[in-house]
Length: 421
Image (cartoon, rainbow, N blue to C red):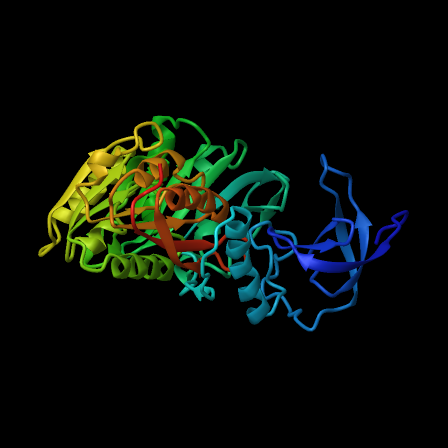
């Protein structure tokens, strides 16, 4: 506590959805746990939200453990390294159960399935100039201030050198004088780097970047999605397929997470022979499903579909894989189109798939599998399917975003009886 600051003692009642401890009056205290008595320093209010900075833990919870990362508490990447594994798992499961309950949905929610594996296989590092030098790291919580780091311990070991690579790549682009975001992905060919935020680079800068890709032994280096050099194919495995995703394209956060999601999706399909994969991305599900079933992949991003098509064509033994470029937010598949399929999987962005869920509710598709990284938007979409006559089997929460408030989930819907009108 600095001079002039006056602390207040409060009791923490519960853990909020973002990992903050919450006191009786709704005060949010990052780093505090339920059952603790803590001393806090009030912060300036932001709208209706009241926060306080944790100054001291006066009576610690028996569930409190020591954070393992030296940057925890300043870096905004992790919210909750200080909670023991069992209550942590219960908290994350309850995030899903609470979202469903708020939407009026009764469904069995399984225990949290861990999918951290070897760690995050991709991360976006921010590069900014601090005291005349380029620094790389993550933003502080609720702030635009950069927390420079040496490495992030929750990433795969191959990604530990990424902050240093980011600092080197920033040099020909102004050394962090302009905001620069460096997305780094671990692939079989090495690190795949996509630089964004800086804007165009002149010919000289591009030459230097290509030379740095050699120095840093990168698989591929891109600038705003434009490949500057590909020294080795940045391959990601999707089942038997070797997939080269587009620069900066979407991938699940961990290899273990993608594998578990794929396993749950494939299992839910049962004996279905013709599948629609909506919001397919580059084919993490399509390529696995196509090992035994015909798949029609629908996605709005042309580069992702091209990567999926290429991987499918060069993987021996797959069933038919067709692709369709379509904006499913503006032009969802209609019921007559959907009724051609035995099952559908949809994995939309965080905003969910409200328009497509409404059309699915009108369809006769026997099995619909929803995959989501946002329990709130999933619950909204699920309510539409339930109103259309589906039942929701067990929902499985998956933790590939360990130590953060984010949780992935899979829910299986099966049609029962006539749909409501």
